[in-house]
Length: 195
Image 1: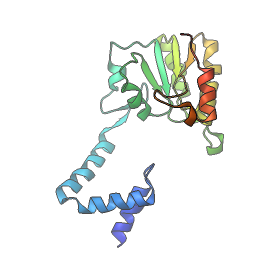
Image 2: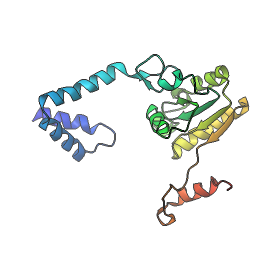
Image 3: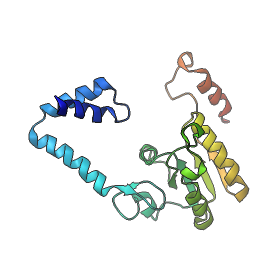
Image 4: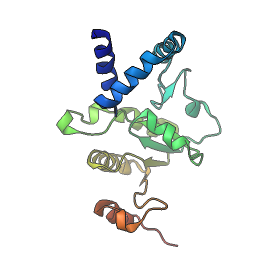
């Protein structure tokens, strides 16, 4: 069953999809009606053809500019720097941030050959110079690469007279100290705020 094996292999290449999940998805797709399977394949093809990166911030868009960059009510003085375009979607769910975004397109990772030139740092510096940016919020993930990227950007940008802040990391709402790992607990102490 070459076609089924090929489908499983392709699905297994998706992030977070192990071989068992790929098999379940493949069997589900095969059980779908022809119309539903064609609609799924068509929506993948259409998304690949129509969705591209915003030339200003790097967010996903089908238009010339993404909805955030095109929104005149948002301030250009505050930019939230994220690793990937999907992070913009997560940040927008909270409906609290009224600034704009800048997508780096990854994080520094010397082991993987990703240095500053592979990220959208030059574009960020250009925006700082041309858009009157007063503050950057660094919202990279709290892992080794994300922290290294945030530190690199802070050292690069602070001399330009722009305020640089970092999103807080710590214990989630409803979390229990008993189940919190040491690094998260240490970060929660480090990022404490006055009440």
